[in-house]
Image (cartoon, rainbow, N blue to C red; front, side):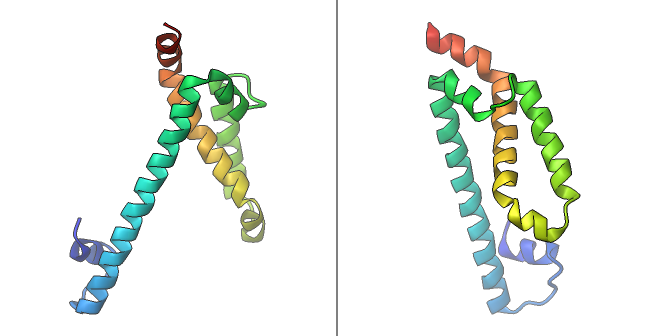
Length: 120
């Protein structure tokens, strides 16, 4: 996607070079953040592949991936219904719930195969 496409999708109809340059910087910043997030999640998953105990410690107090996913979904629904001032105080909990959801979904799908392969 180009800066012009991003600008049009954002509702900007002008052709100012400064504004288009600003949209390009926004786009590049978003790409950098997405890549950094991807590599952070990959690093965590790689650590947990080697040590299943780390995964179960991460989803604690849940006993299985399905329970961890349900707990994360429940928290996310609870979070969406909070007033803004309370949401700001619970930003760390939101980040943990999202990370738990990503990890639990990944290991629900691939965990058994990975750990059997690691054990062999």
